[in-house]
Amino acid sequence: MGIDIVPLAYKHKLDISSPKAFAKDISKRFSANIIMKKEDEDYNIIEMFRLHHENAQHDISIIMKVITDEYKRLYEVSIDNKQDTSFDVYPYHVDLYLTESPFRWHGFETCIWNKDTPDYLEILIKYRNYIKKITNILGCTKCLYIPDQGYTEFLWDESQKGLDYDDLIEYIRKRKYLKKCKDKERPKKTLVLNLPDFLSKPKDYEGLPDVYLDVVMDDFHDLK
Image (cartoon, rainbow, N blue to C red; front, side):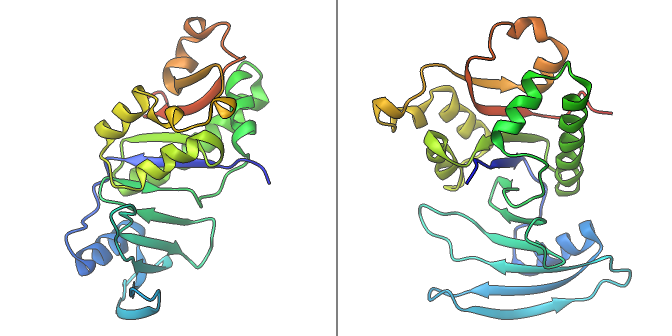
């Protein structure tokens, strides 16, 4: 199995004040019929209510999750019953792990480091525009891409505790997830890359392709 990309979209504007409010918000944003369900402590799924959208373009299933100290996922959202259009909603971010991607993590890195090759750049921009479209619908303004395996799993775990953007950035800045790794598993050189800056000021990053990208930051400001 390859290493997949986890896009974490932050600063969402979703109404999470109640299940009814959240369902109405998602219905409006996606022009969708809604089935709202809940998960009980025995992981049984129980239907709560349905919402009808007059001009529905999608059918969306939402499951209200059981919240724990380590896992602050509020809702699991599935669009048109397709796995690659599913996402999880947390208090401060949306985990887009199951959204469609043309590549896995190493392909993502390859496209970034080879941005001067038109084909690679085209794939990268197309993927970013796809993620941007979803984040715009959700009201998100920041996105962090991380690998789903290796030492960054600790970072993914930390995000699921419900940290806000600033707290997670501080966690990343201090590289706390690296400290949880055994020495032999810890890469010698890692980089947190601001993608728009890298694409606009590549000379500032010369000589870096030998490092391992553990986090890629994106705010899409360079995209039209």
